[in-house]
Image (cartoon, rainbow, N blue to C red; front, top):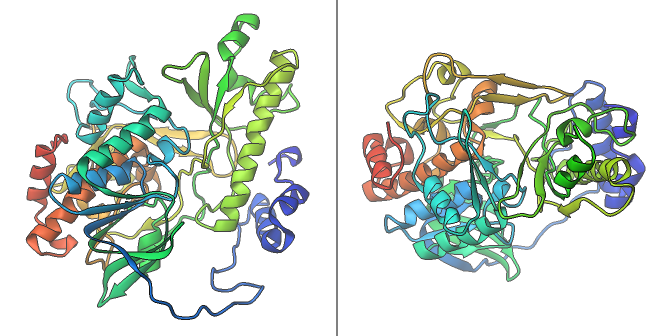
Length: 474
């Protein structure tokens, strides 16, 4: 990374404190030199430790299914289980649901049809949300060789509230998952922290929709993380790009932000974006990249978030000083959270591979389908790798890739499912993760109904119930 784009040591130390970030910055320097960043284990603090006295933790809810993580994936898991009659609790750290789609401003969900545009292969709660947003003029259907769906993310926040409320799910917003309570190898409660204090939610089944496999990892079940993960992006909503284009013919924001003729240019990367539905010359831009960041580590997540916002300011300064006569600001909205592509994965009963995906391998326990290509953002610099389906009009995601090894009653959903680098590059996008959420919700209910461990449920019945819920089961 060029020197003028490095994380500023002085700025970050002032922002977060020298004691907390000194070892982190040393690790980042090594990573920028081609060595993997090193972080201290959570239990090995250079500042020592304290001992907490034992305490009695009150039970805040007693339910059938507890979903940890309120992204669209988590919401769909909770709603799917609740619509089958389960008592469901849903935990989310933010004050709203939606995850990357809302907190990170990533407003585009990809095609629901096969590569030939002949068969609908994605439906269920995803298309229900499309219909609900469309009734509020909060959805733009982008037609072309492939059809895409651009959403107004603020309307999506409220619509997800409605889904959760209508299904009778017990929501816990502004709530952090702290630890699992395990008895005889089964998770029996989730310890949480919220404004009320430390509490617990007792449940029979749990779904880890944290995106970072936090529940699975803290359960002590096997997880893994690749040495090089795809870099996160700080998105932004900008105003006035149409006005700039009228004044500067040939202007293209995706090219301009990397153009080295401008002092504020970002390091080589990849940019995309979409106009905000219902907006007035407002545009969601995804063009920043934060390299060498392990966002499953608290200190590195903090540093990466600050760096992402610094890069957004560079974009805004570039536009203002070179295309807006030095006046005004193009900045409308910053996201609540960095857009994270990859951290930990659960080691599950099946690792989905790129070969299976590109060949369109069919699985008897398939719970989702997709066409989004292998899409790997370079972890060390510019560029992006795309690989498209080679032998089939769509690929499938098996239920076995949602079942952590050794788990009795904890499922994984979302981007932490088990997949190799290539397969993950495709299944990581939200329209695919959504399906894993709905499937995990149904599977959790089915495990309760059949009184079987999650690894032993009848997957034919799982697929049939998903079909009855409107999912595309093929």
